[in-house]
Image 1 (tube, rainbow, N blue to C red):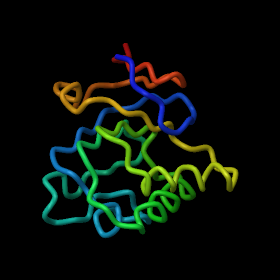
Image 2 (image 1 turned 90 degrees about the vertical axis):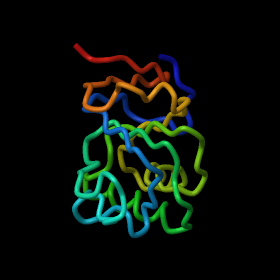
Image 3 (image 1 turned 30 degrees about the horizontal axis):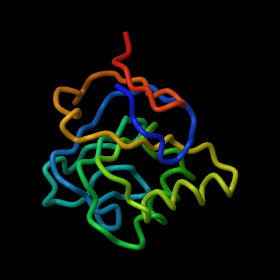
Image 4 (image 1 turned 135 degrees about the horizontal axis):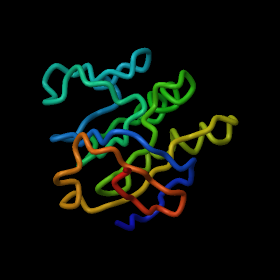
Length: 135
């Protein structure tokens, strides 16, 4: 599958975590553990660290960038982020992390209908946005 690169980053490989509902990083993800802490979220308790995180949507908060930056800084960020549609605030966290010298996850855009069947699969996301199931 070919995805549109939103923020360049390192090529990544890891298990796909396809969220079944949008999430707010502010209050929804613990920046000290990488766990989804919103008790109302269907994937409550799951770790996003090292995953290929597939987001069907985000719930806006201007603090989402800061939470993602914190996750990058402590090596608890996803290995890659696949968004259904760009979220400028969330992506800003990756851009700031790059400017601060951190190796950041690549972020790409892919229609959420293509998320189907990916959960738990080991995915590889190339620097050009190519997404493949890893052997």
